[in-house]
Structure formats: C-alpha cells, structure tokens
Length: 347
Image (cartoon, rainbow, N blue to C red; front, side, top):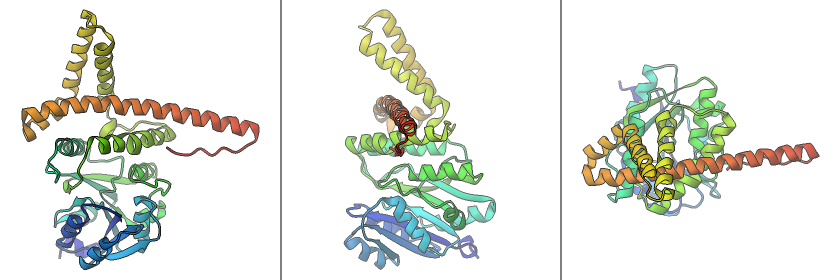
C-alpha cells in the first residue's frame, strides 16, 4: 500500500484570469500517480474557460466572486478540503507524477513534521536568458539551503490541514502574489512548528520572465513587503536569501558600484573596485560554478552581472522599506500621542 493511501492529500491550485500556463499545470496534475485524495481549483475571480478545463481534468472548482489574491483563494480551498495534508501548487508550475506520494511519504516518516516545501527544477519551460537565470538562481538557493526551513512556499508546499486552519491560513491582506507564504512560514516557526525543505521534491516553473516582470516582482512584491515583515518580527533569519554571505555580497556590490561611478578612475577607486569584485566572486563562487556547469561560460558571465545588479536593487529596496517602516511607526506614535488612531498598514 502506497503512502498516499495511508495519508490523504488534497491538492489546491489558485488560478486567476489570464493564467497562460494553466493548461500545462492541469495536465501535469491529471497525471499524478497515485492520484490525490481530491483536487481543488479555486477561481480567484472570473476565469472563463479555465473552469471547464479544470473540471475536465477531474478537479473540483470553487468560484470566488471577485479577485482578491492567491492568499484568500488558497484559504477557500483549504476550508473546503477534507484531506489530512494540504498540498498547494501554483498555476504556473508542472509537478512530477510522483509528487503526491513523495509528500505523503515525508509526513508519514516524520510524525512531528508540520509543513514541507520543494523547489524549482533545473529545466524551466521558458528558454530566454532571464527566465533561465531566475529559475536556476531559485533552484540553487533552495538546493543549497538547510533542510530545516524557516519559511513556507505556496508554489509547491504542503502542510497539515489542522495546523493550517489553527494558524488561520494565509494572511489575506496580501491581495496580490507576494510574500503571503513567507509570512505564514514565520508564524509557523514562531509557534514552534517544524518546516522541512524537501530538496528532491522539484517542480517545473512555466513562467516567462521579462526585465519588467522580474524587477516588479523582486521589488514591489518581494523586497519591500519582506522588509516590512522582517522589521515587524524584529530579526533577520539566517536562511535562503538572508544568509550572511548574501548580506556581505550586497555591501561588496555597493562598494564596487560607488568606486566605479564616483571614483573618477583613480588608482584608489580601482583598487576598491577590484577588491569588491573579488569578494563577490569569492562569496558566490559555488553559485557561479553552478551557472557555468549548467549553461556554459557565456551564460555564467551574463548571470554574474545580473546577480550583482540584484544585490544592488534588493538592498536598496531594503533600505527604502526600512525608511518607510520607520516613518509609519513615527506617524503612528504621533497619532497615538494626540489621541487619534492611525493604523499601521503593511507594504
């Protein structure tokens, strides 16, 4: 008897109108062997023909009147589900046919385990450079992280249903795809629950990244709200993108930029630039070797430039987010002193 027969798993997929890869996602889910206990698609607003497609693949479709983001859609699916394990999958990923059995095996083997997350594989669907770079970076970060995770991941993440409901699920104030999964992970860890990074559970990302969509996602929907979350929790976790090497790399990237942009070509500025570049190469050597092994020298060279630029704009967003957070706190204290009420809103 397979693990999936011993532990019921409900697969939940939120989908919004215009999801370009939903068909491929559904096709992969229809091939799951063994099949999940149930398969729920939650329509985040009107989704047109996507509903018929989901039903033809054997999914139960739950329709939400107006779009309010994947956090609320996932919560709706969780409340309607009856499986012991909730397995959340994004509509722009394709899962391997053994995904459900792997999820069940983890929870059966580790009774204390509350949640687990997977990662993207090394072969994203989109072939353009930015899609390949973004996906390989995500894959490497997850595959080189500790097995004991500090965050959750909504694209490929499973959690015990009773714990999810007891924690009130995802924070529905995030009305667009953002860090609602990371926020849930922080609450789970604060409550003393165990989250595991299952590195062998890998899904294929189908999304096509452009320069605009990548920057918009990294800055507006990740860096700024994540900064707000970190400051509200009062600590930086030593995990994934927040490890000390990443923080040191951000400093080195700024030293490199300032020495080149404002040094006027002086000998001292060039020495600082060279030292900063060497530091970046050393701190991220494993990643850059990974880029080279997987996609060759030319790709690795382009990826290094993008990665250094990433350190610049992500750290700048952290600084901006910190200023916004402090300004909001000061405004809140001012209103409290005057007797008025000024709610502190999240980014």
